[in-house]
Length: 305
Length: 324
View 1 (spheres, helix red, strand yellow):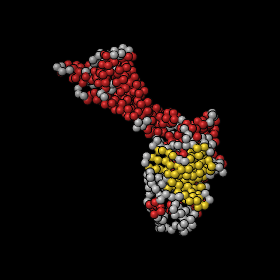
View 2 (cartoon, one colour):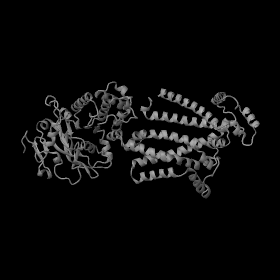
View 3 (cartoon, helix red, strand yellow):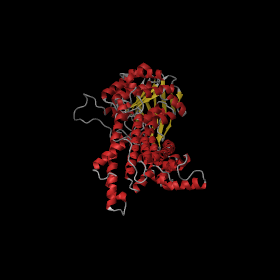
């Protein structure tokens, strides 16, 4: 188990280094950075000054070496637009994104897991069909639209919840619900099909032949095996929630990392773009690592891999 | 010897399909009763029906299913849970998939004892190790900590047997326990079952399609065809004087070394087991039977043709070559 974790961690580090390289290369592929920073209507002389000031006149490999060296110590340079350290910017925005992501995931899991299990236990009954229908609606509904609906009902008409901003925990309820809705369909269907598979398996027949109670059969023997794919997908979904919540952050005016990424891309603030890509990718890689470890804990057959 | 399981008029239906029709047999203490038949004849369904482990779309009906003197047909789910794994245990055909891949062997063995008996984990582990040693698993202390995927098929089936014996059951139902195993392991498992029957006075209901196994381990045989027990008798009688044309056909299909000649085809019964629907009348074997007559479209009486030897046929073969 320990060698498994070590090996997976080393692999994850290699992936992080690859992402660093890609983030660096991709921002430079988008054209001459000095020209885009200078903006339209600038003279050749302005561009040259900017090129010198930001060190863009140095060989690319030297730039990459410097950036990597500093990035590994947590220094991503300064933002061109905000006049702040990039690291500070990200550190300010991260709590918003993290809270949103974890609220979203917690809500999604607490709804989709019981729903999926119930649907599997009562396969082909009205319970199952209702659950599947809910999952389908969730899949079909655009998240910004659901966000606006919630704002109208709970924010404006009922006045229960604040519409936008990040002042208190109540600000995270509606965006959390919207974010959860993006993950619920996949998780519900996965939990349902995993449980159906597990419940029809030979080892469940053995468990029943042993005279075990219904709850022990469902929760001890079936759920543990059915949970394995769910853990993997939940980790991926949390990654999406952390990195891909730009739409929801915009709708609810939550200034998280997704929003920061969008701002800095549109303003050609490439140190921020590079850093955000790297940080989000690292989070994603970290989550995958955690899900691999969780899966190995659940399924002993994976521990040798 | 007293009867541990008595089944009379057992029928199992899956929708319109009748998988088992008025099956009857009795398993005595310290006896191996074999149910033999080809694929699809209803033998596995019969074993699951006794345990009340049929799939949700399966419906069971019987005149009686007497287990240890009590009719268990009306038992609630809770009452059946208390018997299963405790007084009536089962092992299956697929040792590779019958154990939960996520739990250790030890956890799966001790679980059944702790479910039915008030013992500590340490006591349960001691019993598990003793039984593992008894069923021929070396280094039981190590195996206890291992997971199913670390064991071979033969070892896993031994684990299944040990698990079935944890609560000292009176009846062991074994559904094709050796089909998935190679021949040497098969022989070891069969020998083990025979020994356990002697030692523990177990009644064993062994489901198989292999007449070689029947000849080796059975005390009593019931031959099933299309959901019915068409012939039953003591093993020696049944092999010496098979009365039903189907039984006779089955026995002819077994290659006997020395008796068959190279290049000569083995015996076979043309056709397959028909799917039985409600309202079927007469003998189900008549479509494949060489001695079928018009009488075979009528319902078949059960003939007693010897001590404990019954046959369900209008034209039973009572002596070699001659017909009644």
